[in-house]
Length: 204
Image (cartoon, rainbow, N blue to C red; front, top):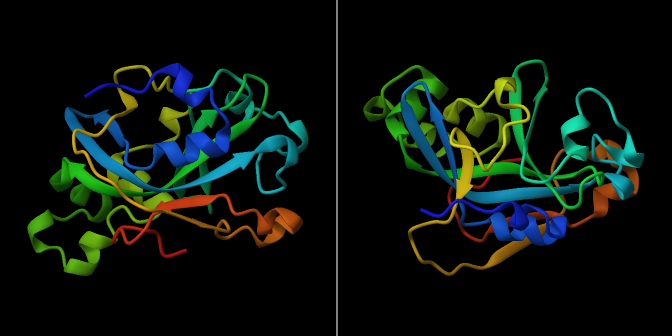
């Protein structure tokens, strides 16, 4: 399938976030090709967003990739144990990104089960299968995405996003973002976008 071009990521961050829905995240990892359809995202725009790591143009060793060219991976760790993957968006120097919050597994699901649970897919309970990739930390573990992927060029051949080979129509849901109670007025920004009714949406 066709890989998304740099120009896609260079657009307005809110538009890029909505445009990512239905696209397919691909990670070629340890001899496996893992794919998941993006079903939920959150936008972060550093200059005005107290929920963003790059708020007020804060440049640190961790956030530096957010200020570079669009179309690169910003991967960070939360709670000392879970990785989260973001896509750098907008103009260079802007400090904006889109968090991938949930995926619907497409390819390499057996390997995702091993990555996530250490068990074969066929013995997982139905709830475990649904929980495979329905959160930012869960999807990174299932897809084998770690801090080693920080700064990966999404136009490369290891970690990238492509068009889906399935033509579908869906309604885009909009809401406030999740787990950002510290962010003062930015808590109210309705910058979470998701495919309405998809069973793999995150639980918060």
